[in-house]
Image (cartoon, rainbow, N blue to C red; front, side, top):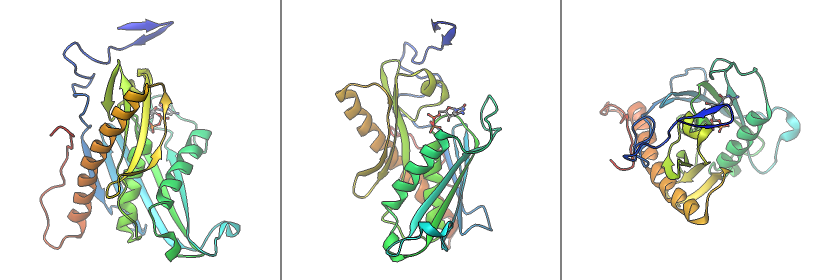
Length: 256
Ligand code: CDP
């Protein structure tokens, strides 16, 4: 344990190169996705990713509310990311805060760039993301859940959008940070990838990295996204294939 002021900092990387939960730097947390658990929504998905639990519901294309946001040449994508008051250690004040507004905005923009919005003028595609339990990477879990929910709703898209955060932890570039790594690590870099083209449609960064570390992080994140993509596809196959397929893969380590 090290300490800064009154804060105790856990040892984030052990001498044998493992992380606090025993993972190697390029390993993802356990990921499980269920497509279509909500019957009242047009599309839905539930994601358990490490200790994160996230539900997404999609409605639309439907009438635009508020009306003045309507666009004559395309659908608009509206996203509401919300963290439940009971989702974090210290009760979060319910309702919209700046963080939720920022996350909702970047997620809506990411989806607007992959949905064929021109096909649905004067409509809205509404994405709701509810974080029931949080342990870092919730915006990425939200993108993954929303993406499967959009596919479940039959909304035409270029591709599914796998998403993951990479970061710098104890000097090492690590995939899929958990809460202690996010809180005490040096940098956090959430991203979302269009797998077919390799285009990143969400990229944020908190903290500091060198140019080389950034490039290493992007490579690791892209590999992580490709593994997550397979779990997303398997969840949709599980719901839509006529023959019930084998159980959805639960783990998706890049190195595996
Ligand atoms: O969740 P994500 O990593 O996308 O966003 P963040 O703002 O980097 O938050 C990291 C983590 O801090 C969250 O996943 C929660 O576990 C935690 N957090 C919290 O405990 N209370 C808040 N009001 C916000 C975040």
